[in-house]
Image 1: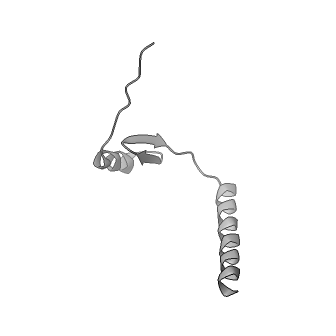
Image 2: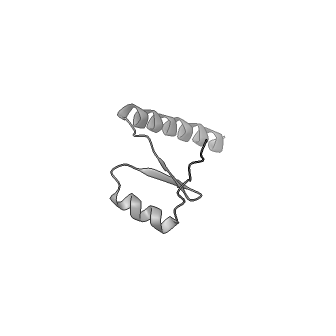
Length: 63
């Protein structure tokens, strides 16, 4: 069994790659990970949760 070497990137290298990439990726401690795409449903859920959290916090702070 052979170990696969992981390519480590500097922050500058990552930013250069990201500018020209066809897909979004995430940088974490020198490694680059492809991010999954989002959908309309994903965005809708995120917006709804944000709204609910806002309302809950507003109720707590006004009490």
